Amino acid sequence: MINVLLAGVGGQGTVLAAKVLASAAAARGWQVRTAETIGMAQRGGNVTSHVRMGSDGEEVFSPLITPGTADMVIALEPGEAARALPYLAPGGVLVTATTAIQPVTAALAGVPYRVGDVVAGLASALQAQAPCEQAADAVARPNVATDSQDAQAPSVEGYPVPLFVPVDDEALMRELGAASRKSLNMMLLAVAVAQGRVPLTLDEVKSAVEACVKPQYVAMNLEAIDHAAQAYG
Image (cartoon, rainbow, N blue to C red):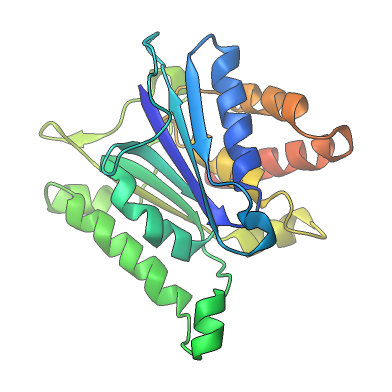
């Protein structure tokens, strides 16, 4: 069983990314169940999507991920990564964009949103999960397998090592020459899959994009996937 939680702000495409992930898993013949918050895209609120995949052929009875059991959290905004962190399992993977979206509450209250502090706090939280000093040093080093089906989470003396992957999404967008941030969701999904902890391939994700995304946006998203995977694979 593989549990993936996706988190973002309304309008970032969190639900679409979850749909693509679920479609790629279903194409393998896995049983998949999903759940998400709907309607927040028009309000700028937080959006979360749960994707549960029976990767060993098992049945999936519930669509909801319980706290502490997500193998991976993919966050399209660092504040949302912090909000979703309690869902991450020990030794899990946290992939997050590092560009902040100012929440309405902070803007109204005049409270500064120090995104650097948020990202540093996320790194510290995952290092605290590591079973020893050597494991803590490995938190920020991706474990990428040549064949993601054979990927194994690194461990120290039998304890899984968490992995933190902060993604400089603004730099990726500049390098890609993207006029908008509409492909951010697919970039983060590509980075997550490229870490080798989820037994899906980038080609399977790209096939799911072709099935789930409107035809006029397919090429843009496929290019974004290739670029992000190359940068963080």
